[in-house]
Image 1 (cartoon, rainbow, N blue to C red):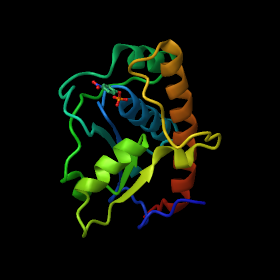
Image 2 (spheres, protein in one colour):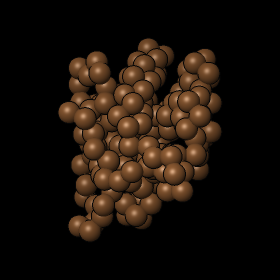
Image 3 (tube, rainbow, N blue to C red):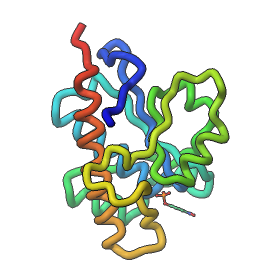
Length: 171
Ligand code: 4NP
């Protein structure tokens, strides 16, 4: 089913997306970097504001994981984020909050205020080859895990952007 954002997207009111995982050093910084790279490549950078966060505080202030960075670099995608913890205010600051897995989703929902207009979705609802609901955590695995995560996030980001483009308004 197509995703329906709650509003039109303009340069004056960029669409704000926060990608969320557990540590904010592997999956969500990779998603942030890929999506940012795609919007720039298509000349749509000013329509979007992109960020990422982790539900846990273990790695706050750290750069993305070295293997995540080298895999992303090898695909031409720089990862520039510093880890931060997801919090309550993010429901005000973002239109769309994308959870990498079901556990992240559950943690996000426990913080969700009743009044927010922010939408919370699973990232892999956008994966055209979705075989699972979760982007697997590569942290304890080998290089293949990181390459897999990059491919999943590349496919999902492409579909996410394609589903948002019809909502862009040039004013
Ligand atoms: P991420 O991976 O959620 O994709 O950033 C992890 C990074 C660190 C930890 C867990 C997952 N950790 O427990 O420290």
